[in-house]
Image (cartoon, rainbow, N blue to C red; front, top):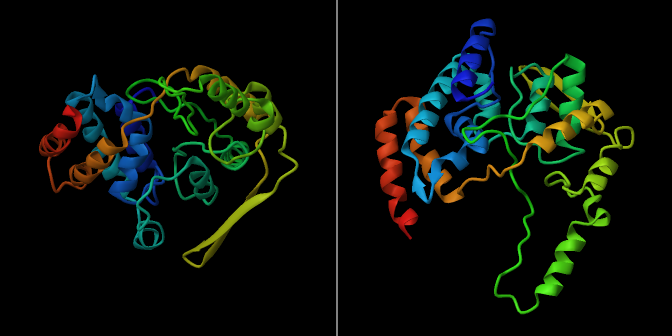
Length: 277
């Protein structure tokens, strides 16, 4: 998948091959749009101005994906998963995939041992591969636990020593569960724990119990992940205020109660004052 259009084509193709259940792990329009915003949100702003061309393309392709996705979702699945308003993380998608409930794992990997452990298990059991998900701004990373030093600080040396400490191997090697370590040595240390932890989950759908257990990521998965991490050289972080407005009106474009053009106009109008400040 190289862009949103290719992704939409793939979802539509998989729907013809797989008439039942979700393809992307989204079970309502909000989940679908939030999932797509993960790597596409950063393209919606250009010099603090709304990029209406990028927004239009996002909503057009999101509507295609959503319509193909929802064609195969049954009443029971909606009752179990449809009330969740948040996008799935890649770890929770992996657990659903293990139960043969989705066709594509998509989302953000939030932890080395948890999410990547689940992805590693599913990939190796099913012969899957994983890759960076390209957004409209290309492939990159989503930052977590950010640090900065205020330009007007009166204690910049103390602040620098704090940042240095937080980036040290000693701190970075602790499994915070949020984000991947940026310290290479800590990354390697955390990735060698596949036989030291055991996690899992279970649920019941249609009278069928599904169990999924896994450890840390395998060495092969870690090496693949490391290759991908080294390619992710720019931030794909978006603006959360704008994202909320896009979801508010974009959902209507996905479910057909509003045209894409009308949704773009509403988003443009509602965000104008904020972007002008």
